[in-house]
Image 1 (tube, rainbow, N blue to C red):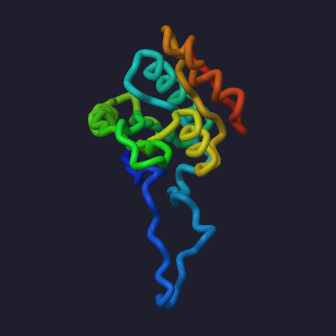
Image 2 (image 1 turned 180 degrees about the vertical axis):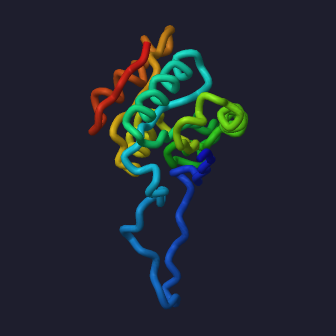
Length: 175
């Protein structure tokens, strides 16, 4: 089983309840419904880099050994807008990231994913927050990420390090 699951970015506005409508919107409605077949699976952050490819290989083996599914997460970049409206705080917008579609096509053609059921989830926002959020939604057994190398990781802190500090489930960092 293979597939793709593209969600709306988290910062998009939700519909406002119509006071004249017969049924109001549920306030405690979950953010996304997830396929029960992927519950208690292995979440892996994937962006096509060498370290994320290693993390994916490890996560595939982990999911295969445990008989669970694989939730592959690609988090799109976000940048602050350059124009502010009056004195309001800056608004974050999703940068168009067509890499998710390219990654999805590459993964769909990959023979090494044939052994486990998998799904590709696209999110926008902070990588650590989104990986943990997907892990929570799918009640994941673990989150697998590749280590960050380079100056960006040294300045801002690595995704793996920040995720390991805040996650509520096991985080496996693959060098």
